[in-house]
Every structure is written in C-alpha cells, then in structure tokens.
Length: 359
Image (tube, rainbow, N blue to C red):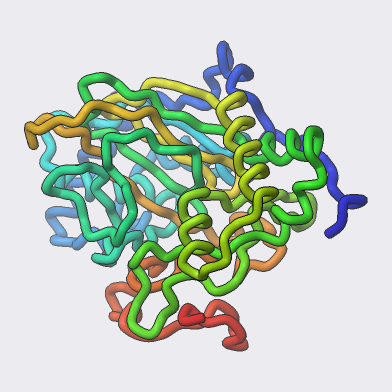
C-alpha cells in the first residue's frame, strides 16, 4: 500500500470524544426484566453444575436482553466500535457468581478467549489477591493506563469495585488517529503500515520466541476497513529485546498517535455495575491513574473478558493482523479448545503452517 492509496475513514468508527457530549446512544441501560433474566440464567447454570468454560449462549437464556446484546455486537463490529452497559447487578453476588453471570452475558456477543498465563477465560484486573499470573504485564496496577488495544477481537470490562478516587476511563477512535496522521504527517503511514514486532511479555510457551518475530501492521486496510494494532510499550519492549531499537521517526510517529488520542478521546466515569465493550481494531482504551489502596476489601476490581466473533471484520492478513499478537502460550484459546486440552500442543497461524506461534 503506498501513499497514493491512503483514503480517510468516513464511517461511524471515525469519531471524536466531543461527538458524544450529548449523544448517549452508546449507553445501554439494563432494565429490571433484564436483571431478572440474568439472575435466573445464573441459577439455571448453577443448578446444572456447569463450569464457566462450558457455558454457551443456549445455556444462558436471556429472552429479551439478547436482542439488545445483538444490537450492541453490531455497534462493535460495524458501528462506533464501543458500548457501555450500565446497571449490571453486582451487590449480593460472590466474585465466582459474578464471573459466571458476566461470562454468560458475553457469550451472546462472542466466544470467550483465554487471556493470561493461567489460561483464564476471565481475568481479574486488580493489584490484589485475585490477580492472575500475567507475565510482566502491568494490568491492574494503580498507574495510568496509556490508550492501547488488547489482543482479541473485543475487550470487555465489568466494574465490580472502583477505586475511591474514581479514575475515569478513556476511549479513542483509532480510525480518527489514522485520519489525523493522514492529514498531519502522511509520510509516517508507510512505516506504520509496515508495522512492528510485539513483545510477548513473558507469557510465551516452551519453544516459542519471546517476541512475535515478525512485524504486525499498526494500521492495515482490507475492503475499506482500516484496523489498528497499537500498544506502544509492548512494541518498544520487543524492539529492545531484539536489539533493534526504534528510530527517531518511529518515536515521533508514536508521539503523534498519543497526542491525537489525548486530543480526541472520550473520558467518562466507570462505576460499579458498568460494563464497557471495545473493538480492538477500531478503538483504543485506557484510564486515569488512581491511588494505591492497601485494604484488600476496598481495592479496585474489574473482571475482564476477551471475545472473538466469527467473520468480525475483513483483514489484510488475518494470520498477522488478527492472530499475530495474542496467540502464544496459554493465550488465545477458545473454551472448547481449553476443555479439550488443546492449549498443551503447538498451533499454526495459517492452515499451511507458514507462520507458527514459535517463530
């Protein structure tokens, strides 16, 4: 792709935070009947003795709520790329029951994917006792989280307990980042389309490389759909580990991306019972920092779920753009594969085996 073929994104995925000052169509408020359906579905799952990994959409009946979840899923795939659900029931439920109920809701949107060294389909975002093994990732720590993407199609976060100083969540349109780079510094785009290696943050398996070993395009395009894969810290770490430091131009491009993201982001309070969903190809997410809380019972606690959706998007190279950053070690396995023990064997990114997780 050369600079003669770059075209601005004009669909709903290109937005500015200011666009939503009065437009609240991205918020989905749960009604009493929806909460009733969630609690009934949870009871049915527990009565059957189903493990979390065994729950599918048919096992977790949501007779009216599933219609709203289908609409939400369309927003993620072909609309603005994010949504916020408010009013999920939290009080009176154990962490285990919340995980079951939240996972059951998410299964009406996509397939749960493993997301940490423990092979967990849910990930407790906290600096407390519930924090899973996560390599050298800084997930859950009080410092601010720079805007970034996660590794599967969709990232979802449920707020169980927010920090006392109420850090706001941040979202930014990666389509808007692309449009602004095209407008301000188009000479950066060829390098961004070429991409960068990604660090695996000490979560790779035996026989797998510590970094991707190949470049993952920061921006890519297929059939008019521009996708973004950006996590500055992980890309820098990979190039340091490979003794191939980034150039001054690379750093300048990243500085520009971070500046545009800060200028155009949407900031909003994220409180108990809120769930945010983001497409990891069109939306970056992050948050403000918060104070350290020594009391375990008062620590900030989110539950994170990663989802994949069949035919979610067109990809310039699915093996690299979609699967190139999150399919190593115990990351990137479906619940079905996890139950079958498939996560113990090597896998290939392409049917012809051209790119494996070990390279």
